Length: 388
Ligand SMILES: [Zn+2]
Image 1 (cartoon, rainbow, N blue to C red):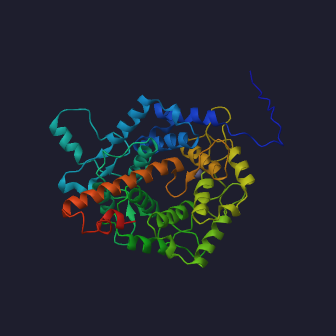
Image 2: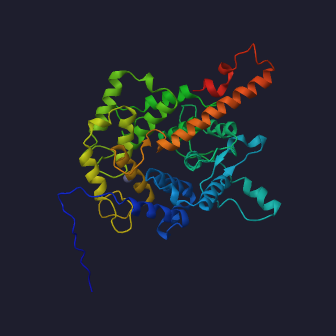
Image 3: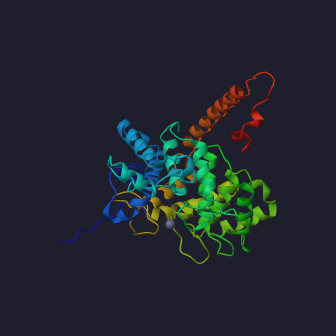
């Protein structure tokens, strides 16, 4: 027996964004990981990030019950590596809990410590989830986490993901910048060599590549521009260079956006290219209707979610980035997204409040240390403030 679905929608009408189906789709990933995604268990923090932040963009955080919110926050902190004094380089969040054995056996626990270290992408997404859920980050030692970030910076300014060794490229430059910006602390991270690495990856066509002499890429160009903005260094690029980068980005639009010349368009580039253009105030140069039409062609109308291509399976990554792409064009019902941090503007406002609170507290600490509240100016001596 076969079933034929009769499409009753008027083809001349724009397709609706199925907001409640997308929300239901994302909630599902907070309860279980489908078998087809089991190989992603080691990066489960990123799936939580797509689901939680996606619900935020959908204005649907109320679907996360108080108990589930507590469980997600506790689970997230469960991945935090708290290093001993001689292990500072291991600080950060892990992506999964496989290295956390449920045992009281001291020998086993001690042995497993050797396999526990933070990963920059997992640290970024974990902090973003906590901020989005309204956590005050009080369980974090910000300075120690930034020590972990500085420990994976290379002499050329790039970053690896973790101390165990991994590729060092623009993706982890971006993650390092998000972590330091969100924690309002750059510690001993070298922003100058980071800038030099980013600029050495600007190619002849004015896109950025993953590393020296690679091919310009849309995701990488977003990472480079966002890292420059978050580290307060975007102003170092001259106007002509910025215009040429903008041109490379605008030319990535076909109907949706592609990541590189001569590649097929893909839903996620509505975020990568869209966010890069928003950082440069150039997003208005794009065709909103064509962009929307492409993203909606990848919408799963049965179970919700977005895929990279039409008639493909939806996944949390393309669902979240598709929603962000729609938020950029002002789709009704969606919350706006802060382009360089890739969290909602509401979550970004929470983060700024935390920064204000920390700066006040750090000033107070400094006053107590100096023991003289009347004659010394402390605001300029705070490393956390001067870092911005
Ligand atoms: Zn994609």
